[in-house]
Length: 231
Image (cartoon, rainbow, N blue to C red; front, side):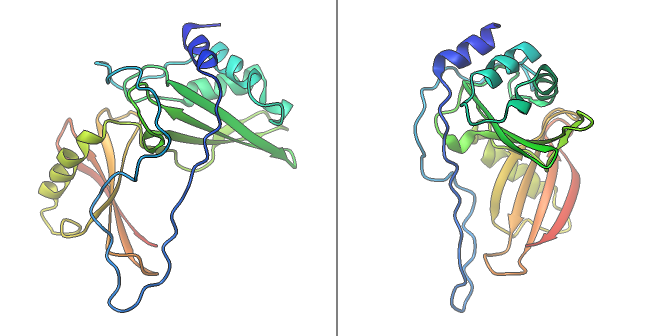
């Protein structure tokens, strides 16, 4: 077992419940989303380190992931505890600073010849579950192929970067497309390119609200893409 796997097993596999907030209809005038703030602290973890000097990287080997899969709760499907799945996950999991998570939880379910697999990783510099990265995959048991099952939710970056990222995105909005809107969420993205983040801006909490997903490069200091979505 590698150092990364040993560290994770030593910390123990503690399943954390991921909560969500649902906001219902409001009276006129509509409620406007508040500017970006971290959610109230969820269960506190021991911070193992500060952010490492390296950039994003893949810190796990297939053997590391296989050890985690085999140590998972007995209720997880046996179809998931294979070297093939371990290799696929190791090839897909990145961390913001290239170091192993202080906690990596892998679970899933299998039905009808298909397995849905998810993983939650807490960076070594993370103190609460608000900074966890979430990954989602699907495996076809007939072919053995593993593919992404939706976009990952990558919140595992230092929150003190948010004001700078927000200011950069707004300064680049020369057409005024989103710069007057509240910032709802920020996520980092795996390379390529290096230093890219996606910032989500929204108009409110009502049905049919418009949200803008703005991908920026902190290296080139440029907007890479803008996507409009009606929620």
